[in-house]
Each structure stands twice: as structure tokens, then as C-alpha cells.
Image (tube, rainbow, N blue to C red; front, side):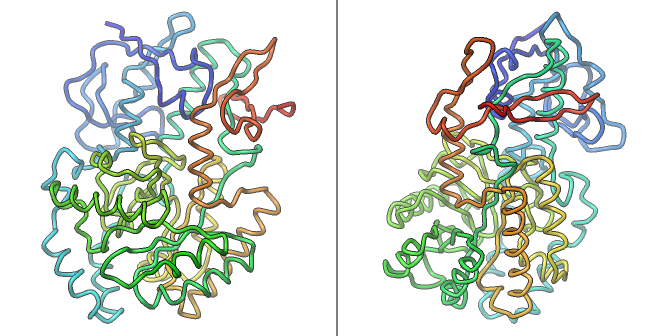
Length: 455
């Protein structure tokens, strides 16, 4: 049995003509979800119509690309593309998925003890405990580290199929970033303690010295005092503030009833701070509960969470919607993990991640902490990073933006559409003057993008 589906994930990713998203699911899918692959290196999770998907990732996963067929100009896939993309972005492939609250909150008692004792633990002790907690990270098979492009690869593979199905030389779409820039960069700073709060002014000076504006995530309760003058000091200098958890105790997503109570308080602080953005403490998350939040964008989901307390990852370097909330995923390694887990006081890993993401035209997003940049050696590494980003901005025309600017652009792009105009296309929608038409083409079997030089 065939099921015709308009694949909204594909259309929203590319903002391409509707006909590209008309894809059939070939046959009845399995009753349970599992792992399969779609060509080498692209691991999927979902229901499958041509066999039983695997409960675990193995070296012998079913290859769904072998079951693709065409009916004239329609693609037939052995899975629901929207479902698989949602499963990957929503981290439903994890054993601790939202279907098992007991698992997602496992270790809560030890976490509470750690956060209660954290202010009194010497830094070397904290580092030792965290290394123990993260041990074995290098053996994690999926998501891929240091950057995972599974969703992006899946979209590219289906666009390749669309070109073949329609026997098309090219397919137009709305370019990912404004004014045709190749990628965007966002710098954020999580302010975790009094020392970090007091270093924010100096950190703004460092960012300003390279012409880079950043966002500071402020904890509203318990950790340190804030006041209107403190919050205004960021805005007056062109920086951004966002709400960072409620009290950063690691318990935001432990219990649904308590979460709903805290979510109301967080929503109140979002309004009080005059911001639209949020990040949870320690990147703890349950995307299925985000409907209780009233902010516009979130920055709590890592791309590949090998070095985070909660493993998983959204497997994409592009923003995506969780209901009405736009997710700006973390796509690079945090400074704390780089310095204190990996013991690396250089920007070589960051440069590697930047180059990988640039090749896929994704979002390059950073989390650094004023608390950890006070120390001279760490601050020197951060200055090297700022210098590297400023150089890439000049050489490759990267867009270094505030999270709020990215949020506005991506929401506007979400409302844009391509309209036929004679033998070509034009873009309609908010912010259309900054949008550019691009084309997906095949170079041999490789999908390549090019900008329309007339748009």
C-alpha cells in the first residue's frame, strides 16, 4: 500500500517548490521503530516498510536506499521522512527518550547531591567527578563526533532523489542565510556564578575588540543577584541577554509537575528580562515538554552531546522548530569540556568543527563561560578563537549574529515562498530583500548548491 505524504521537514529545510515534497511511503511500515541506514554513514531511526529495523546500531543495518523506487516523477521511500527527521531532532533514538521518564531522569538523586555540594567542591574535584561521569564518551557510535550531519545528509540525499525523479538539471530553493552568506556564527556566554557575573564587562570588552557581539545567559534565581542596571548594561552596548534555566540545579526536567511550575516562573523571567531566548542549565532537556514554554527560541539542544551530562543530540547543524519554538542547536564543543575534560588549550578542535560546518553551510554556535575565561591561559585561547572568527568573517563573509537576529531571520525564511515568474522564480515573504535564490544540482553523484547571481 502506498501512502502519499507532503514532506514538510524537507520543504521547510530547503524552502523549495511544493512538488519536491510529494513523496510516497512504499508499503506498510513496521509497528515499532528501530535503526536502519540510508546509504553509508546516514543512520535513521523510525518505522520501516521493507523489513524489521534494528533495536540497536550494528554494522549490518538495513540499507533503505536499496528500497527506493520511482513512479514517474514521484519518489517512493520505505519510511516516513518527516517521522525519521523528527525522531533524530527530537532525540527519540535515545534509550532515555521522552517515552521513558524514569530513564531520562535517572541519576537524579546523585545529581541533586552534586549540585548541592558544587559550591563547596574544589575545582580539581569537580573536574575529576565530571570526567568519571563522561567516561566512555569516545566509544559512542552515534551521533557522530565532533559534529553530526545526519539530518543534513538525509535532506541532501532526498533532494538528490528529487533531481533524478524529476529529471531536473536543478531545483530552486531559498538560501539558508541572508544575503547569500555561506554560514552563520553565534557566540553565547553562560554566566554561572558570581565571579563570572563580575567578569561580564571585561568579556564584552574582549568581544568588542574583534567587532563581535554576543549573548549572555543569566540565571534568574539563587546563583547570584541581578538588577535592572546589570541587565541594561548589556543592551546599552549592543549585546543580548537570555534566561539561563531558573536556578541551575539540574532538576528542571526531573518531574513533570515541578517542571510546569518552574516553566511558569521561567516564562515570567523571560518577560521581565525583556528577552525571547532561553537555555537550560547543563543542557538538560526534554523537547516533548517545550509546549509549556512561552519564549521564542531555545539554545539547549547539542548537535552531538558526547561531552554533556545528558547524552544524545539533534543530529543537525541547522535551526529547526519544536512546535512554535525555534531551536538554535549547539554545534561546537563547550569551553569547559575543551579545557577541563579534553585538556586541550588550543583552538584546533574548534577550527575542525568550524570547517566541517562551513562545508555544510550550517550554524556555527558556541558556548563559553565568563567563569572559566577569567584564567589567563583559557582567556588566551578564547582570544585566538575570536581572532579566527574575525578572519573568517573577512575572508569568507560569515554572518556573526546575535541569537535574536538568527531567530528573526529563520522565522522570516520559514514564511517565505518561491513564486514562478516567467521562466524563473522570485521570493515572496517578510525580509525577502535579504533572501537569495539558490539551486541544488548534481555534480556527478554529488549534490552541490549555487546562488542565483541575479537574485
